[in-house]
Length: 297
Image: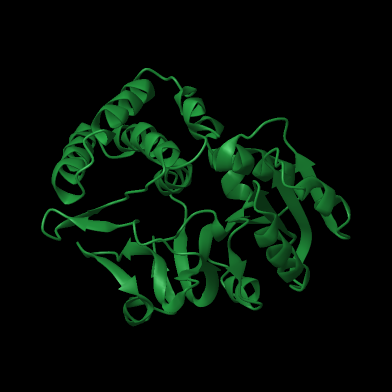
């Protein structure tokens, strides 16, 4: 199987400088493709001098969504059987890919994504199959695994593998999402297509953690993906209702609206976030995917 690694980067050269050498150490990687989202920090010049790495610099910043859209298409053009997708801030263990490749019964699968600051915890909390709460500790994931696998759960675009057949079946990520929600949409699209999905718990992938993701709310009954960035929040508030409407139904959209109001009125009072959220949701409903540009710096 020809495995092509695809990395999407934007203005994080120090992180790229640690990731690319790691990928070059992994013998199962046949080719490394880096999609540079018009970085201005010298990324393009550095990549031009790295042997064994191909890169493309996009004419403008298209976000993670646009980067993975173009990168996955590029890997398919290069004859990939499997595409290994990741952002520039992740770092796979040296045996991560080899461990993932022991599974030949999956279409869309990935490693346990661990908090770089504390690898005993997950970077992104997950809801285990059949449960109602989310878990944060790696030991809970290991205890719930069957045959070393958590079925139907994966953290997209953080060291995940996707087969050529699945890409041909479901297409590419939604580039217009820019950031936030493009990974979930791709996962839900794969699920709808009947893809075999899972997290291989013995494969490890480090990622910087943030305490804001999965913030408990409503007396601990649910969580909210808060971010201090207006750009990220706008994209989340625009894209998430679209995903919910398409794959879960209008009641879930309504619940997201209620959660947003509750979170910024009671959990972490920030009243100014409410009109921003409303504008983002309205833009999404009417198909305007340009509103995030006002928050770009």
